[in-house]
Length: 87
Image (cartoon, rainbow, N blue to C red; front, side, top):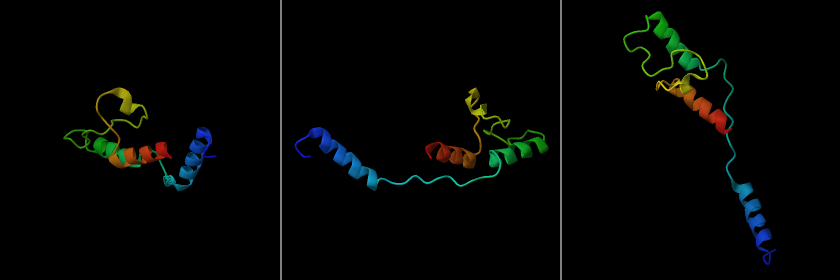
């Protein structure tokens, strides 16, 4: 195997696959963007003014982050989405 460069690479790749970290699966959750939903509902209850919901999306739409107005879901929801995408 050491005479062939291709086989040497395959040996290295295979040995590395056994030592790599296992990806942690995100835990199951009930509901969609539950922290964002609570923030949006609180802002609606309080009249939507006074900085109650600064930086938070205004509606529960998955495309709301792509609108370009700089608003994002709650940090906990963003972290969950990131972990889900990586898994």
